Length: 196
Image 1 (spheres, helix red, strand yellow):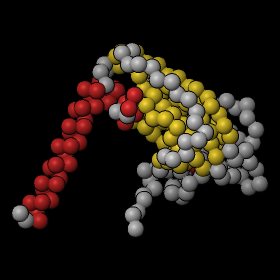
Image 2: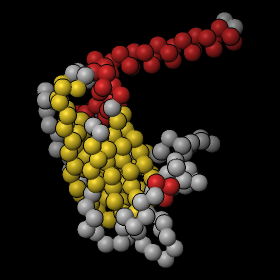
Image 3: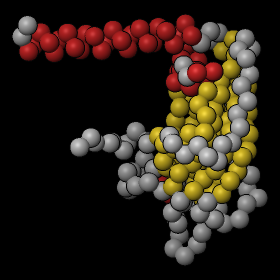
Image 4: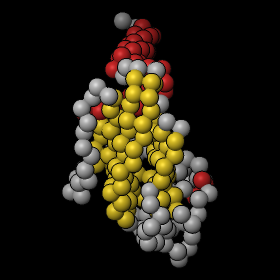
């Protein structure tokens, strides 16, 4: 088998895998009513946006064309435990809508809300969350980096969260904070890891 044949075979196999995954995700998420539950657990190791001034972190969550935020009643700090539960609901969603739906998480300083100065943002596809066990991710740290900043690879802090997506036919899963679970951390897509 020639090198060219191997390349063609490899590319075809990847396309088939993507097609099957796509078909599976549409089948997995049926038309209907869905609820999204986001637990914002804690934030830590925040950088300072303005010199000699501690930030006042706010987490903004956008889903189903709705935007909600964590409480503003916190002190300036570089680490904070939120443990705030935020909910979104939508009815009569088509399979196509579900397939393209996303959850956007953004973290910023209450006193400096210019998007270029955000700590960072992370986007989750519905199908990614729904394909997980019990249709949720639990106690996951995400590294905060801002794709709109001058240095898109700079990590400005870490945010811990849990997310569940359930239909009316799914069993509801409780999301609880776990201060002892520090194993998993997701990097934003603009930061590439290398294996030595």
